[in-house]
Length: 547
Image: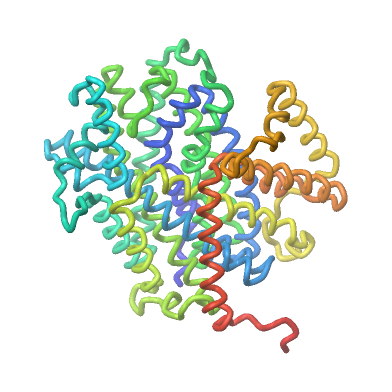
């Protein structure tokens, strides 16, 4: 593969991947639940991602091969864990890109309507589940005496999609055609090669950064500090309801590590690019969140285009139009980076014999993993026709967090002396022997003071049904892991940064709910079936003790 990616290219690709669907769409719902305090959630999530980014940077520098967390897990944990990570990364890249494609479709149809007056029929631009749920909600409201014209636009469109959709074999044909179209276009671009892709990605980043700075500068003059009070109207629980939306806004920086074989200087540039892109995006996220919640009341932000809406609300229609157009550009760039990442992970797995050789085959002219790129396009495009944004956002987040946890754990298993000898970047070492236990005690005391009834309620299992107990499983797992890591860190003097990365990522997973845990567990079990029926028999790894 051709090495033509510089530090600037990598940093821009990181920004292109991170700033996209999250900041333009999911931030609205996060702000609606958490109020202005959601800005603190961005800070906490950024800290967790920084821990993970440092661990990714060490791996990307010391193991400069395509494959991201899959390759890193292979080096530190062996083939089985690596396979599980590769299987989990399908959830991040493929399912995550489904969410991005759906969001792109929403903005594109709105922009098309606003600029040209062309109306895409709702049944051709909405998923089946949203239309079905919206139809039921609207019927309930109509029965209560409300009129269709009084309802929000998204509910009107859901009702129209369901009532106007053609029926084929007893099923309503409700499909998100724009989402399908953009995935095919991006797949064709990635198929042709990374040189063309990086030039387009760099252009997208210039446009996005310009528009985001415009939003901050123009919006700050319309901020009313009274809108920041109450700062956390729904308390900590309200803020934490936005975990999935906020974390989804950070997904993407790890995609840089899949391009290691195409970097001019991966040991030097990959670590820097990850940190640079993460820091830049975090600052922008915090500023935009404060401007957004300062311009209007948080109660008005339960919508899919919050940045466009707030400028319409204050009368800056020209800014609103620019934001809508830039959202289409921003989300397109995220699709581009994610579609680059997944084929390269499959290519690495195929090289190890865990997938058929076709997945590693390069195009004779473009030198890209052609077959893997086509399969990725199909796996994203077809589900994007009918899947729901909320569900795929949650699933993408849990798959990504799982990969982050394994990468942080992998750094703990690496020999820092060997890493330093190779000249690779290393995670700064801070002895966590005393720091982690003290942090654990402080956090426990804070919970006891702020929520005096929580421990008594949470650990009372006498009246729990299975459903009630199942929802406690994620938090019980986190508490157990925390106690274990405190003990291990005290005994083995473990490095603080990867330990904190592991624990913060696991905590974010607990906020995604048991249903997502259950789905992800079933997904991993399906992966084990594939591994033991195909991967084991075709693996290129030597058995233990082989000469």
